[in-house]
Length: 291
Image (cartoon, rainbow, N blue to C red; front, side):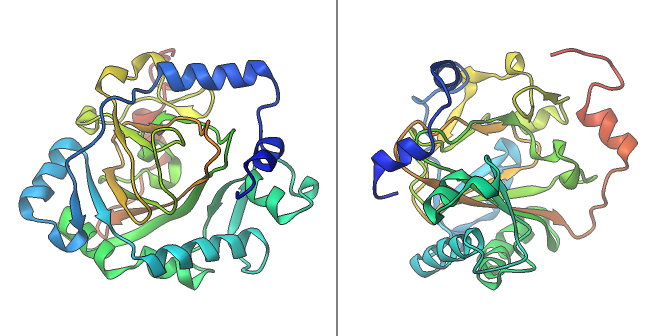
């Protein structure tokens, strides 16, 4: 938003208690003094050593995945979806759409855009970009397939936290082989507006039970905050990470947008887990353990 005062008015916390909770979460469940510095510039620079490093740490950072035209095309496509100029994709709002009277209100209330690959050609081109597909094939050691597409939007002064979690704990991503996600910044993703945070090596712990607390998430008490690494990104930069890596994003308490594309890939040979397999791995149904 160019008018930050309007942004604060349109998308702000309901009350002081809600705002204080967001501040407490930001201050206690995330750290900001340990910033990722191990990066490569482009997808073409990915080496076998870095592939090995990915599977050791659970993630890698590439600073230039999208060029300027791809960034602007992606933002334009998302805005066209939000404003009903591009049809078929799905949008999740934090308020009933019927209450959103202007385009500005609609943009600020949009939390997620998803299922766009089959409906929005500009975003499909990103999902199947040759550089990204090449990285996935190197990491998997076989062909890759797109299994989920979404855009995650944190509006100014109130964009909600995404609690610590593993992506494969969400049913659509529960496969018998590790999925890999790519999270691509369309705006500067910085320490104050909800950049990604990761726990290096946490994917090695395997599947962890999740709980319905603020979201479908890891128990707050089990998050190893002392190991948290923040991953700020410039527009076009990307975090690529294992579907079992512990990661999350704090609330956006700034007056800046934070929009990002997130696409998940699976090896071509991967199969979906059965409901029973999923419950055994990612829920406490079998053990009765409490958060």
